[in-house]
Length: 260
Ligand code: DGL
Image 1 (spheres, helix red, strand yellow):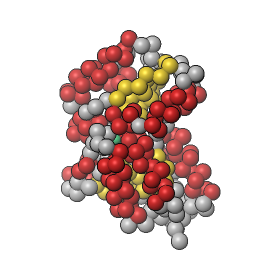
Image 2 (cartoon, protein in one colour):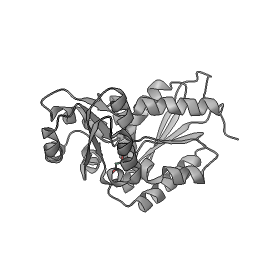
Image 3 (tube, protein in one colour):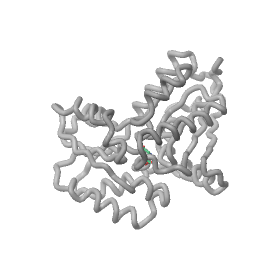
């Protein structure tokens, strides 16, 4: 029997999911969370779908061992590659996943939308189907960003290489009349301002984090798992790279906010 008091497990290939965790903890202040970053195996976005399925399944095992009541896949790549399989394997527990927030951008009336994601996310049928759904409402420019999540994993927002790599990746997109940018990888919000700065006009960023949090709230409510006891929220960090420094880094990134 799953307990209402149990924490919610959140996972990513590394630090990216901390950007999602910040919204989850803010909008669900009565819930506690355990974040697992699979940094030892990052990046996921340049592996095969089968490899990502295996890795995400292993992380879910670790989180289930902590008696979590729900799982949030705070990784667009793992959602695209593995969510249906994981939901089938663990039918006893809500498993939700972040996906590129194209709908949010279209609903906001954006007409020329750039979607940035890992090569795996952008190549998978789930994303292709999503683009096809909104084809008649907006021009969608899909930009796979090899290497970008990995650089952010290594240096968050401070590496000079990030700026150089980003400019190179984005150059072909700067000719398009982009009015909205979907950050289809949870690592990218850490460099959200840098992404906006590539354009010579204002662009709105979309992450989908609020929609995901609201959906989680509905799932928990439907299963009578939403907490109402106003106990102080706890957030615990775990990592496959089991070093004190890695856990301290997660905590520091969580505390400092992503500045979006
Ligand atoms: N943060 C992840 C995502 O949302 C994956 C980055 C990676 O490991 O390649 O896609």
